[in-house]
Image (tube, one colour):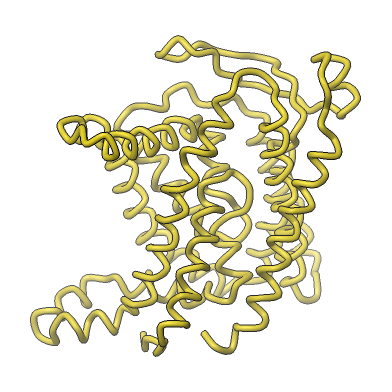
Length: 335
């Protein structure tokens, strides 16, 4: 592919888009792929990932590293992934801390409300990209919605610590992360791998800050395995996704819209725990939950539903995606 020339301002723009993608990838709400799609860099991202192939790596010996770096759009990739990792590192501890709070709290309700607003805005945006709905597209949105809803009512996976599972979770999550409409973190939630991964990143950061480098291998190994799974999934699925968008763009977008609609069941802020299990660390983990209205939530838990607070965070989430759409439309021709 032909790399686009960018000055420092242009690369900063890519970096901030990367930060937005990283934030989306940390929280089980909107996908990084949706952010890339809305902000006008999605096609370039797919083309750049596809450029990572054996031919280009072999060409380093004959053409030189600089030439291959330009060919694979290295500047774009470096700026984007620096932004992504900045967000992941800075937000992992915050999100993990809120989700680890015991019982129902205002912080949890606010967080899930924020995710809910993100998804609603993403549904509207992705649906608008389907020009001229056909019967086939309607079938796609219905099937996508039904599949997502079925997944959200499934029990959380019990094995979230094995080497194979972390590799598989990484490959599957990264595939979802580059899809407009499906959150990779949401997939991790469904698999039961979200807390181990986010907690693992948090622990790794704490070990590095404390200078306990003898613990790096022990603490970092699970995250390393997860990262390898992400790399394999990214290089493989990007080609499948590129083919789907090239051959069946409308149907793919319609199905993704349905998937997001069905996934709202999982993100609803007010929950009732229906079933639990005890993990290997002795912690009680909810495996099946049901949705409650704010009023029923107050009656059941004898606590405030934080409804105005929740509405405010949902509106904030919606506004962020809407703002990204405006920015993407404004700068799309400059990328």
